[in-house]
Length: 169
Image 1 (cartoon, rainbow, N blue to C red):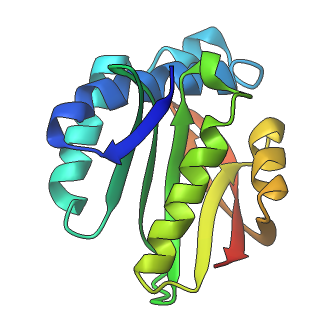
Image 2 (cartoon, rainbow, N blue to C red):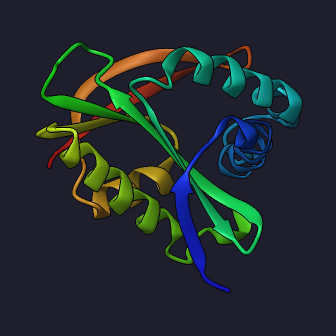
């Protein structure tokens, strides 16, 4: 069954939150304890996406990937968080764990980069967990390079270091 991409809607946000949680548990399981991965819950992440989308939908793009009628991935992008008007920020690419290695991440990435170009951005940026080797390798294969800039963020209650990556569009 083929995968189709479409613009996300408010009706997708609860499912986006649940998928976000499943993806994050699979990606971070080698890095965090089971207790650290239980929060936020899928329902809480769904509410997080509803709240976030209510504030950002005017200048952000949510793209969902479906296989049949099942949500199997999504991407989320918007203006740069550092205030550079020439740069777009890729906030998220999340996949159902079973979809990893099947080309869906590359499909969502290509779509996101095309959307960034269509918005006139010349550079794309993203943040990735320093410890997340598979994600870093995925981005680096796609032409992204670390900038050397870091920031700390909480994953649940655990401090984590994020690395900033960028690539030309």
